[in-house]
Image 1 (tube, rainbow, N blue to C red):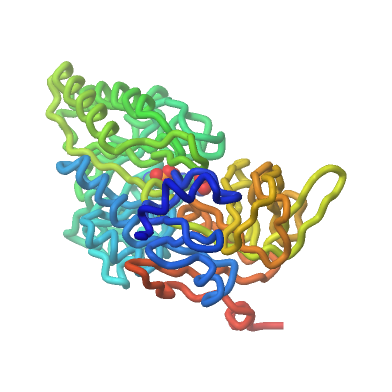
Image 2: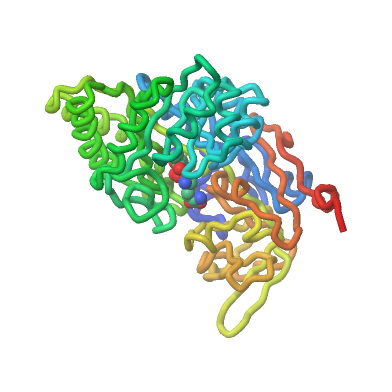
Length: 448
Ligand SMILES: Cc1ncc(COP(=O)(O)O)c(C=O)c1O
Ligand SMILES: N[C@@H](CCCC[NH3+])C(=O)O
C-alpha cells in the first residue's frame, strides 16, 4: 500500500492523532504510531540526531515561498529572516526568487557572507547601531527602512562620498492587529515606526528629502504578527494611499513603492485560521488600485515580508519525555527541551497541538501540560494538550508549526545547549545546524 492510501484509513485509529492539518503536506502516518515527514520517520530522526531536535521540511519551505511569489508576481516578496535563518534556508529562499528582510548587522553579514545577493536585502530595525548602518552600506543592501527622524542624518553622515542609498520610511497607520499586545506594531504607543496621524511621519519625510543622497523610494508599514484575516491590511492601504497622495501634493513626489510588511498568521492547531496568499493578493491589490484611482496616484510596487507563514508550518520539534507527574489534579509531562528552545508559550501564551509519535497507544486521551526542563514554573510548552493517558518517560513527543520564532529566539538558559536542525527531503535527512555543546559555551568564556 502506498503511504498516501494510508492517510484516510489510518487516521481515526491513531491514538493521540488529531488531524494532520497543521503538519507539513508531506506528513504521513507510519507503522507503530509513527509519522514520516519528507519521507523520513520521526522516531528514526530522534534516534539518529538525538533530542530535542528541530526538523525542517525543505519541500514545504519552498512551496510556501513559491505560494507568495506566485500570488504576487509583480511584487517583491521578502522573507523575514528573524523567523528562522540558516545557510540552507537562505539558499532555498534565494532559489525561489525571494528577497530577504534583516534587522541586524548579524543577520545581514550572515546572509551576505553565505552569498545572498545584497541588493535583494532590506534592513529594518527601530534602533540601528552605527555597525548595522555601516554594514548595510558596505555590503550594498537594496533598501534601508528608516524608523526614526534621528536616523536620517546619521545614515546620511555615514554614506561614502558620491554614493546614494535607497530608503523607505516606516510609518504607523494606527491599526491594531496581531495575536498579542507584544506583537502589535501598527499603532502609536509602541516603539516601531512614526505615526501618520500625529505628523511625525511627514516630518521625517521632510528630513529625508533634505538629504540629497538619500533616495526615498517608498513607505513601509508592518502591522504586527500572527494576523489571521486580510481586513487589517485593507485598512492599512486606506490610510497609506491618502498619505502618499498628501506627500505628492505637498512635496511633488510620487513614491513608487509600498511595503506592507508581514505578519501573515498560520494555524498552530487544527481548525485555526491562516491567511491565504491568493486571497491576500486579490483583495489587497484591488483595494490599492481602487484607492490609487480615487486619489489619481500611480499604483506603487508592493513588497510583502512573510516570515512565520513560510518557516513556521515547515518545521517541527521532537522531544523525549523525561518525567511524568500527577500533582494536585494536574498531569505534567516533562520533556528534554523547553523555554530555551521555544519561549513562545511563556511570552505570548501560545498554544500547540503536541502529539505522541514513535509508539502506538490505545489509551484514552487526557488533557495534560507539557512542560520543559528549565528552572521556571512558567516553562510550559503546551497547556491542556490531549495526549494518551499512558504517556511515559522515553516516549517521543512532536510539536508541529515549530519552524518560526523558536530557534531564532532560543536562549542559553540553564546551559542546555541549543538543539540541532535537520532538513528532510525525498526520504533523506541531513544535518543543517549542529547541536550546541558545552564546549561551544566554554569557548566563549575566556576570563576569570
Ligand atoms: C518589519 C517586519 N517585517 C516582517 C516581519 C515578519 O513577521 P511574520 O513572521 O509575522 O510574517 C516582522 C516581524 O514581525 C517585522 O518586524
Ligand atoms: N516573535 C513573535 C512574533 C514577532 C515577530 C517579529 N516582529 C512570535 O513568536 O510570534
